[in-house]
Length: 242
Image (cartoon, rainbow, N blue to C red; front, side, top):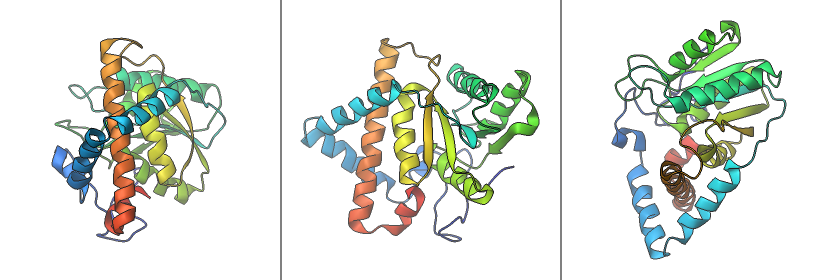
């Protein structure tokens, strides 16, 4: 099952969705460049305090495992490497498979469309990896229209409403979960965050710190963008994230 990301709740033409293999600018969508500039300026003017606040939230969420029974296990997509899941994506998928095997949800939902120059979607690559690990194909659903985390969750929300699901187990690498959780809550989704702790980079490494710093800025950007759109009444942008 592959829900479409076009013309959902807000009606045809009102909700912007990035095209397959979208460029950075295409992923930004309406208002994205403005909010990015505002996020950078606000972090600089306030001497990095908004970024530090977001960094604390990134670390706090990374250390939490909220695994509990739910209606589905959602694996957030990750850009492929030569058409195959990266080590980070594999760690996410492996943790989701473990949660399913433990009986915490009856189905797995893998999100992610055709990104970069990939010839197949992240979701399809994820399903192939899961099936190779012994997960029955019949319990795996796909969301193949999205280009980034916001669209992953926006499109999954439509499927949840259609199927009458209430709660998701949200699986990603630990440092990504604060932003994923904030996005999910903005969309009104009830989620339990489940970190794939085996995902690289190793905790405490230079790569880990760089990843944490980047995620903190992206989380700050999300908050800044949401606040700006609400303040200005930008309904077109708000329709993508609320």
